[in-house]
Image 1 (cartoon, helix red, strand yellow):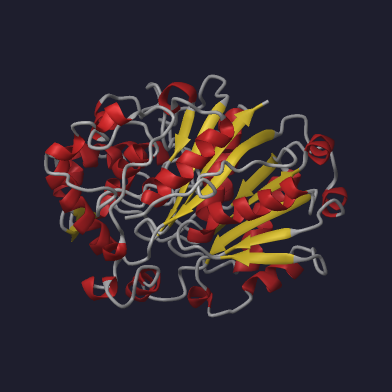
Image 2: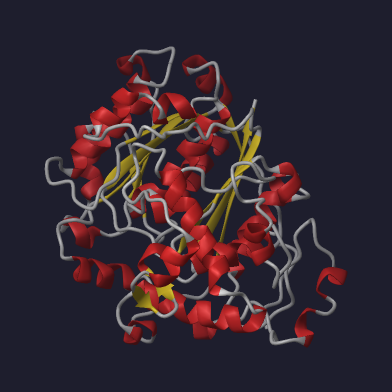
Length: 456
């Protein structure tokens, strides 16, 4: 059993406040043959610097940068080690120092965490975080095997070299323990595909019914194709800075109030039982009857300790005591519908065993108490892995700056990506969201970061 000491649960703190200045991204596609990775990263950087109302010129911005963080999940896809070095030079930052981060599906979130640590410690004043993934230079089957290597190759790989198979087993276990109907999972897919219809950046938009999702082809029982994230090509850039530098560049920076990480064993069978780590909105009374039913242990095979750990630290760091009541917007790492509903519980939107209530109640929708994945998420819009955690924070930043319509509703933005703005397009801009949360998740819950953003 895992037993925490006082140091293990120490709440992190920043020595200096960290701000998000701006962000930019490409659209996301299954294939992007006309542009290489360096070009995609440059396109995202230009949006962040030239199309985000900064008060400095591109050259003035470049001269403020003193450290860079690069985010790429796998060298295998582009067959290039140290790809960050090529992109660093292409963006004009050579010979400034940089690092490249890799933590599976959480690479984007971990990269932002690394950049935030640099700014918060005083090591750097201005740090661009550049994320991308090149997933179109190998066949889909090979790509799936590369991604599946982020689980334990000694054990999980035998399930078929496909992440959907790992999560399908989790889905079966979770549904058994909590009596969750497949229809509830299908609602998540419908919601996120539909929200992607209003984004020019999206790869997999669509308007589906629950029946459409349930009757869709099975990838790995019970998960259908419409319940799984997409393999994407694209890039995203987020610029972080200290307070002085941030306000030199923009009048509307967003405070990165907290960003924290948690991990868990790569091999799921190695995960040991322990008492539930309680979030600020939970007590021991919350779970007094929890282990009297089908669930006999925690975290077991159907909860993510890494997500709970990251949420525990981030909530306490940011002073969040009730996530559903206090957050105005949420971005989850919806790689699969089942991982989404598991995350609802891990981050305290509902107690363990009751995650389905969050989606069934309507609270996760745009007109609900806590709109979730208005970006379309990974299921509807993208999972260009190194860019994913960055993309989530950009979408949240635009919401807090009141710029959703500018980047999603402008017909020229759709034309830029070779698309036509839908006649039934509608704005998903929220009314003055002030506090938001984003989850970046890897593997079968091996690495997770939780970020809390606050509008100033």
